[in-house]
Length: 171
Image (cartoon, rainbow, N blue to C red; front, side):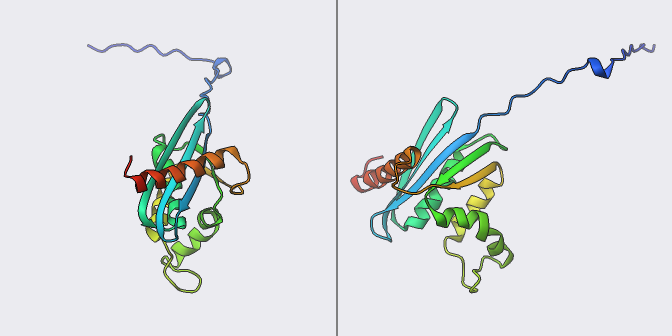
């Protein structure tokens, strides 16, 4: 026995699209700190989306300031679980901003060598950062450090908290 199907034709002009709201932009401020270079270091990130706010921080015993700057961004991006999120990264590190927006593609083309044919420093972190950034729509903004930018000042405090907790043995 065959079942008859009923097909109803709809006037396309009568169909209205249901707008899916754009997810809120995630604003992230990051900073790294080091006491001695190398020495004990910390990283911090302040994340905001709408009315939600999250703080992240951590540290390493023997590291450099540049590694902590990169780690702050990596940890913040890793905390964003929704692929395709619109993210604005605020960093006071020209190393991070220029590295990701200008130098990275050239390093990859040269097999992770600088223009002087030397190995790129912190290649492990640059590769991880590139992988995480590719999952989202990221805008990179440089902000001056220690200039009263509220998000940057908070990220700096978090980075220093990472060092303090590391040195004192706290978590």
